Length: 106
Image (cartoon, rainbow, N blue to C red; front, side):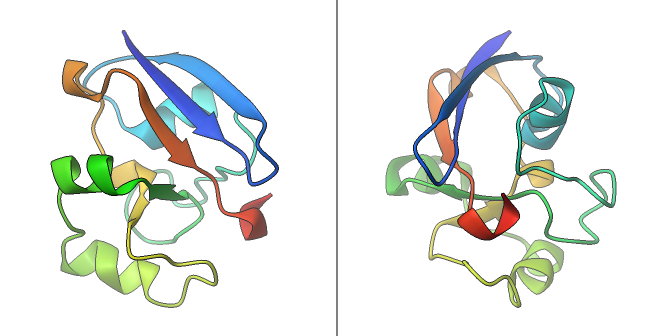
């Protein structure tokens, strides 16, 4: 298990124990984190699992691929460090990661 913190736009934090080899999106949904709708079920076909990472974590995880980039393009609160949580796999290396949930998803 890996400790992940989801932070709502209002600052409310949700600490979860995420199972490795699953996505951040799955961790959020399985733990009832508000703001991660996951309408497409993790298929990178929507942006309802949009999260914002701080620069340190974004640099570690890399940039979105072309499909993810296409889904993020029209997202209202897109930032330079936006990612889709369905495209980020939980590993031990993510221990302590904090992800910000955009206000428009709340």
